Length: 159
Image (cartoon, rainbow, N blue to C red):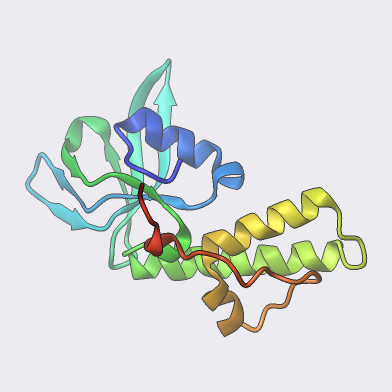
């Protein structure tokens, strides 16, 4: 996915499929009908009741966990699905980075000595999500070699 999102349904889909998709949902800002504006919110939850979206949970730049009723939303600007390493919200980035590295270390510990295709695929997905630089910064080693010919996501060449 890793691109623009268009509404609560997309937010719900990314959050529900977090393990499969990786990353998180972040917006440039969200303005409530009361006039409050939150910059770089990372969405953590969308509650539904009887097929209707009821509330939306997010964490702002200060690390405050906020839950609002969907009727309180005035505008959400720049809604995107991003990799953990691409998040602008540093508080959530650190939380998700810590969780992903911890999960990757447990995954490697459980699968030590057995490099199956599914293990390698999941481990590489996590490495892509957190970035090779963060992997090196936290001294995490994988039981298989990483390809050094990886193109950073910010250096894409468009045809």
